[in-house]
Amino acid sequence: MNERDYLQVALFLGGLIALTPLLGRWMAAVFAGEKTFLTPVLGGLEALIYRLSGIDARREMNWKRYLGALLVFNVLGIVTVFLIEMTQAWLPFNPQQIPNIPFALAFNTAVSFVTNTNWQAYSGESTMSYGTQMLALCVHNFLSAATGIAVALALIRGLTRRCSETLGNFWADTTRATLYVLLPLSLIFALVLVGQGVVQTFAPYTEVTTLEGAKQVIPLGPAASQIAIKQIGTNGGGFFGQNSAHPFENPTPLANFLEILAIFAIPAGLTYTFGCMAGNRRQGWAIFGAMLALFVIGFAVAWPAELAHNPATGLTASMEGKETRFGIMNSVLFATVTTDTSCGAVNCMHDSVAPLTGLVTLVNMMLGEVVFGGVGAGLYGMLIFALLTVFIAGLMVGRTPEYLGKKIEAREITWAVVAVLAPAAVILVSTAIGCVTKAGVSSIANQGPHGFSEILYAFTSAVANNGSAFAGLNANTDFYNYLTALAMFIGRFAIIVAVLAIAGSLAPKKSAPPSAGTFPTDSFTFAALLIAVVLIVGALTFFPALSLGPIVEHLLMQAGRTF
Image (tube, rainbow, N blue to C red):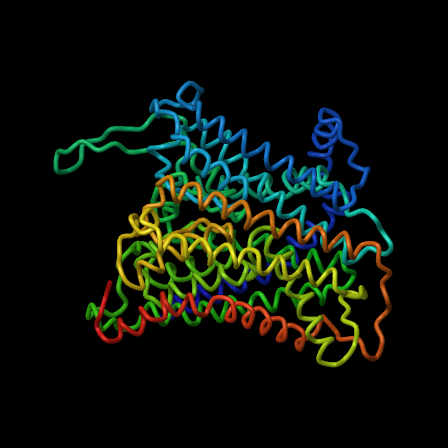
């Protein structure tokens, strides 16, 4: 640890706190349909999109129609991406003449990018053509992020509206999220990345002669445009196989810092948007504070763990699996941030980190990706925990639980429990299947607890829609392609169904004014209780599995054993 590392962490936290109200206030205006500085530029295009699509943006939907539109939109997205992958050899923008994608891998990748997971069981530069990267993967980096934002907006409306049967219009929400938020931010960020040296070209790969006289092919492509939205939209899918460890995706320390900050920017800003839409910005800051505290706790465990002496190797502050351009602190910061969200981009190999650092990355995802989380998904995930928190608080004091004046009753809590337990069950059951089948264990690179962690990490990442991996696992097999695709689909849409059902249940309810017995949900006490509920639920659910993996690996490492 040195002064520059501490300074960079302080700049990161300061930049995040400063950006949160700026982005949050702007997004609140956009989604309320107010005029912004972009309206004169994009308002006509928005109206044209509605007219060509036959959409009446003013016609609102109840939760079932909202959910139906969302599911149809996303299933059609999976089919579209799949077809592009299966025919890319005959489509334009394929200067390297890359062949069509095998069926199982194409199916897995289609589900992956539509669910905002961006799990990649392949190396992009040798598997995907420029056309597939742009028309299939990059497009759904925008649309999957917009879908998450739309679900968060629906839940906020359910919490804040009085006696309403509707939650907004899914088509309008996704259009505005894409047109006014994701597209402008990505365009600006892409230009910044190009200025830092990220490639953006349609030229074919270049063959060069190295200093040793050998021939080497240098992959190129329109990378900057995809890198921008993969970070801003918490998607994470890399244009190149090494993701943000590749110098063409992440060439400089400044690019690295901005890519990390971009991952948290919109998820943090949405907490402020929530406060604005709730009419009480302190509500948003309470959610933000809980998320920030959980991030700091995880980073405070991972950073020293990565610097500590390793008795098994005799090394201190090992650079195994890390880029010398970034060093240990930037590697740990990136790993913590990317697993706190559903981004999954990496600038180091998580398979090589210390067991406790690996533990932090796993726990971040197992908590439900609520530590800022995916774009939109982190907010609605944390609001589910907020409902559980007020329910538990109500039980302790003997009062009917309320949140934002709405009574939280059995129906909402039942769906909240479904949202928490469904992904957890898929993680644990899928991991068990992976550990007891020949097809599951045939792909791991290590035995013992680390091999178990590789399988556990794969299914945790898939269900949490994160997409990062312990690189020691070869996931490009039929077993992992199909099973992780199923895990990604359930991990995304089981929670969305529950969230929209809760929103639909809350929207028609009256909002009661606060009284002397109301538990204030904009206070430090509430934020602290919310943090405790998130950690306790995570510990009760996953501690046995973690004990078999990174925890026992850490203890054995202290005894000088490796796997």
